[in-house]
Length: 310
Ligand SMILES: [Zn+2]
Ligand SMILES: [Zn+2]
Image (cartoon, rainbow, N blue to C red; front, side, top):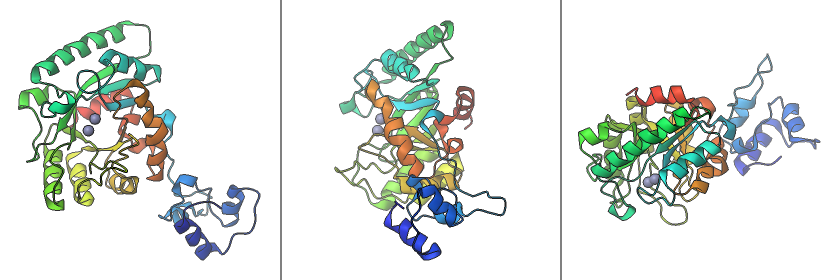
């Protein structure tokens, strides 16, 4: 049996030291358990969920798979700090079999990352309209670019454009990038205010951590999840391997509260679209994520309806 120490200990306490078996499936079966996927072996309730009922059923989640993803949300282009054009990024998403692509370049306050002025937003939206017309006219499967923005969350929790500009986007990802030196109360108030903003649809990399580089600001994740549930805002699971933020240990609290999780590549070049399948899906599985709980596993029409639903 392989798994985290907590899993193996809990197994031994409940079922005794395991006998040798030819396969792990046989080992779990002998204990009256369904096969527990390796990602779930963390001692976080998976043994109880694997217990078979009278009909042989169990309560393990049907974990998300890479093939469940239908779209890539939160991506950058040369409009801000990405290294590929909008067209090249969208084509790369389509080449990967996806049906939609959300462009979310940086907003105006993030000057160091080429944040978009309102004029540049309009220009990009003209580009998107032209590209979508071309996609609609060609022979391929339906494919659409959605006009998003990764709006900075300002120090007071406001978003980074005037109302009319915010209203022009198909959806807004709200992210904190600046002024990271905050107490937990300050950070939580700021993030919750951003979630309350009626334009926000997704909360980006909620804690701001960068693995092996910085901790991220302290955050009352429970309060943030409750705010997302109240305002029907999805939580990002940022699949960039330097972030993996929100931590997978919090994903179940989010889905238990009915909050959708967006597995987002935060791609700045075409190859980074693969962050979703290389890191996002495998790590989200540790958080018990199912396709039904994943925003960008929705088919194109359902995603389109969802972003208009707030
Ligand atoms: Zn960001
Ligand atoms: Zn980003």
